Length: 247
Image (cartoon, rainbow, N blue to C red):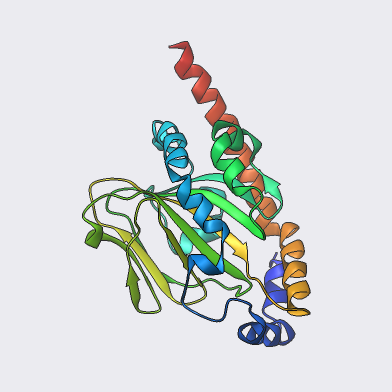
């Protein structure tokens, strides 16, 4: 059955609303954004070492983490292998409680960010390359905090609307993912960013419309499928952890 949310967001009325986003956006319509436009990002940078410590414990079991497409099957359009691992904290109203408990300081650092919709560790294995694609909802802003960035920097980066950027440990990278973008890790190490989707700050009435779209997304078949997939993985992960302790 075709996803009814996808049908809604592709209607002419919604497309018209999306076209008004640049006019109503409180942060403009840039490809990249600055820390000053999102003041909470500085606190994340100040505490990034705490996030790194919790991440390192998770990476001890990186092979057991779910691939992006395991949680969200529609991502098979851009990734089909085991090179893009994820560790979710939340997504459109759903909180991955067990994951948050394993990384309490990371979760505490992000849970109160204004407009937070999605949060997870995005983990690129050595050699991973995600082809060019683009997001569908201009009401969100994409945020990356560099948590583990292998060298050389020139072999690990992202291109957004033709502009190339490289992650830096402890630094923010904020962009509009509705522009065409691709990302790569052509190094021998794992690249990890704290990946957030944030509701774009906008003037009324589009701020209300944007909020409403997020509420609808909570109940979409895509969100429900992702939630079920996460819960299935979580049960296996906990079982594997207990087995490892027993040995």
